[in-house]
Length: 203
Image (cartoon, rainbow, N blue to C red; front, side, top):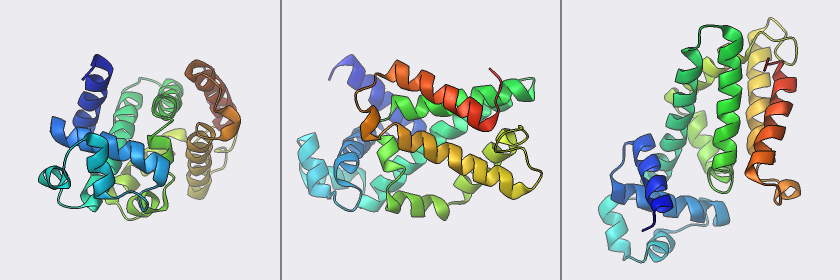
């Protein structure tokens, strides 16, 4: 296993509190989810991608749903870490800048796997029913609200809609066929510019 693969495994394990073996299963599943969707991916396919038996996968996770849960929790943890960094800033303007930049970085860095996963209907339903996700989204909405752009209104719904538009725009843009040939640095710069205008974020 090369250094890059080890770094990915370590990141996945840290994000979802997984063992190294479990992280490898989740990473293999993420690649397959991105190609086939959650519903189109079987435990046998995950085992084949890892070069192990299905029993070896069962040793780490009892069901595919547990793998899906671990993948979703990992993405949520990464988002929460970005929020934590943003909320530690001393000014609201800087906090909003850190949050927007961090979300863009997450989307671009994982554009070929997680951005696809987050748009899967199974994952969306999981998040819709997830208390921790709702709390994280509430924190994000609170921080992103207050600009003169989409979030300029005073109603709570304004912030929720603006946050949803921002997240959907970023996660959708990174996997759109029109930008498939763009390098990550260009994508990151363009998405930050778009997000700053959309949410009236300074910086």
